[in-house]
Image (cartoon, rainbow, N blue to C red; front, side, top):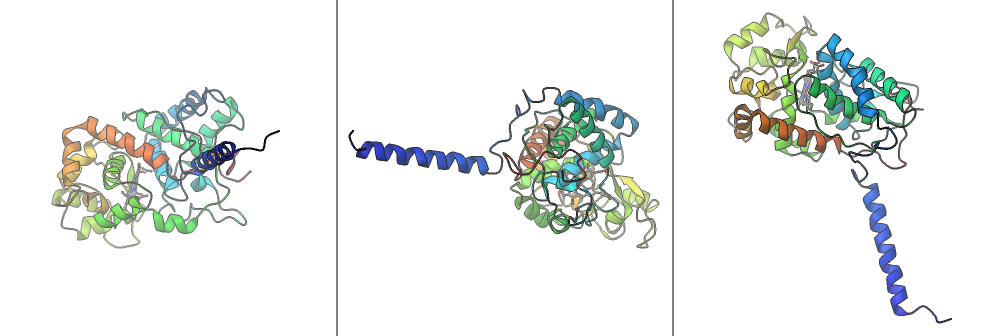
Amino acid sequence: MAAPGRNAVSTSVVLSCLLATLLLAAGSSSAQLSTGFYASSCPELLDAVRSALRPAVARERRVAASILRLFFHDCFVQGCDGSLLLDDASGLKGEKNAAPNKDSARGFDVVDAVKAAVEKACPGVVSCADVLAASAMEGVALLGGPRWKVKMGRRDSTTASFNGAENDIPPPTSGLANLTRLFAAKGLSQKDMVALSGAHTIGLARCTNFRDHIYNDTDIDAGFAGTLQQRCPRATGSGDNNLAPLDLQTPNVFENAYYKNLVAKKSLLHSDQELFNGGAADAQVREYVGSQSAFFADFVEGMVKMGDVTPLTGSNGQIRKNCRRVN
Ligand code: HEM
């Protein structure tokens, strides 16, 4: 038999390079997320999500906002891997008691109910990270916002990062530069940041997070500040958990009112008003005031990009049975 020739050797080199490239691609951040990921393993997924989420949102509309925020806080810490959903346990310090989440992140019981419905339809198939991604989309749609095809295939982490939650999630004291920097650290542009911030057209915030803005900032409508001061006493430690809507008029409707509030200097958080303060984001805010469909399109693009932040895929991580603990 003839010895392998130069051609055979170079063909095998090319094939190994190809294999290495494919393996690398498979290990990279979003290589395996796809909209059809559960098409054959769990075609009932979205129906199951809806069947559990609808009654919960009918009971309390805010819960759709709370779940959308959970998805954001999950994706910004170690990527969208369900790490936020883990309870503290021996040997595992969770993220729920980190500053941005403590006394604030909520809706975990509803995520549990959605996961239970999904487990009933397709046991052991769908990750908590994907349940959260699908629930965030469905919640937005239930409040009148856009619906989109959610990419799936994330797996659940077996770890959490308390420090990541403390450091990577932007605080409401942030200026535009800091907001832009923290989103860039997750591969998201300033444009994505401005579009995703439109999530603050739904939901509530606690006095402790807007006190400085309504008492000390000057870029705020005086009448609006006065109204809020009645709900949020000046002294730190008094009424810290009193709630006010992020969008005063329609906190249960997902539309472009958030941007109208910014232009009217009626945003609840200091960080929100930073998006319309004579800076680089002003034009985009005005665009969304004029066009809700432009906002919806960019919001969806931002959500898909945020959902792509370093997921665990392939055989990494696990499919948790109970979102609150590692299997
Ligand atoms: C741009 C930087 C952001 C900052 C500084 C920020 C900050 C905050 C703060 C301080 C609250 C109130 C929490 C409380 O008082 O308990 C809040 C609520 C909320 N955030 Fe953000 N956020 C940002 C971006 C986002 C993004 C990207 C999303 C989702 C795409 C989001 C969704 C929400 C929702 C829906 C609520 C209301 C939650 C509820 O009612 O339970 N936020 N945010």
